[in-house]
Image (tube, rainbow, N blue to C red; front, side, top):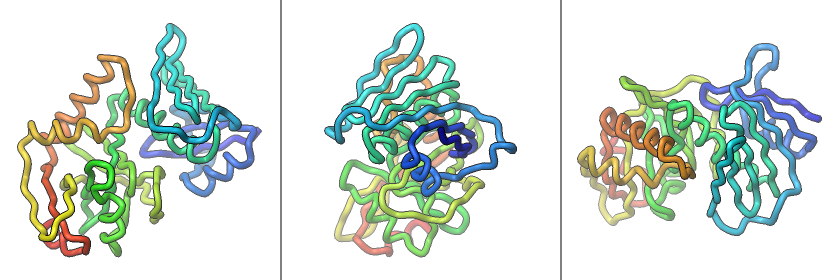
Amino acid sequence: MYNLHLTIGEHHFFINTPSIGIKEFFRHNYLIQDRNKTSSDLTIYIEDGYGLPFVDYDVSVIKTPNEISYKRADYLIKLDHSYKNAYLFIHDELALKHALMNLYSSFIVHQNWGLLIHSSCAINNGMAHIFTGHSGAGKSTVARLSYPRELLADEATIVKITSNDVVIYDSPFRSELNGDCFPSPFKLKSIHLLNQSVTNSRERLSRGESLLQLMDKVFYWTESSSEARKIFKLLHSLVNQVPVYDLYFQKNNTFWEMIS
């Protein structure tokens, strides 16, 4: 068995797996910690060889008195109600990545800590800026065009939300682009809803419209009304503190002139 301690955001996880391939996946993609210096917020047992290759993104959620299960064709998550122990059964590396996003999103909502938002995020002048939208809107394009600005995410942004602050942590849930590891968070200055255009412009949205636009950008699956209320309250706090814009942009880096 292989044991690893890793950090995501400000949370510490203990990984236990019999697979050397899974161990190497974490060593290449996550921040590994000295086990003597960290305690674990969640213990995760992982086995491979489960199910089928990726079919679609549909996840079924089953809640019993003993556990919560998230099931997709290529992975199965079993999680106790205390959010202290999780069992992951995965088909391949893609399934592991998606299962971890599902698990982490569920974990931080349960803790009322924050949200995992489907987006890219770049640093400019020491502040974080999120770019999100529907599939194909240009999240990865904007991430590439933001160079030489550092990236905190190119697919899933880790957002910590309190009543008086919103900050972004470096995300290991990458799609294409890697970046440096930033252990400290960055204050979130703006959120942009992407629209490809022949000209550059942006328009600030009302808080109500911002809330509606961001609801389907959260990585989360739940049939629990109490957990859904947590998401809504976190989003409400987010849009009350951070301006949200419709961003119309050309496929070049000149859109940053409106943001900087």
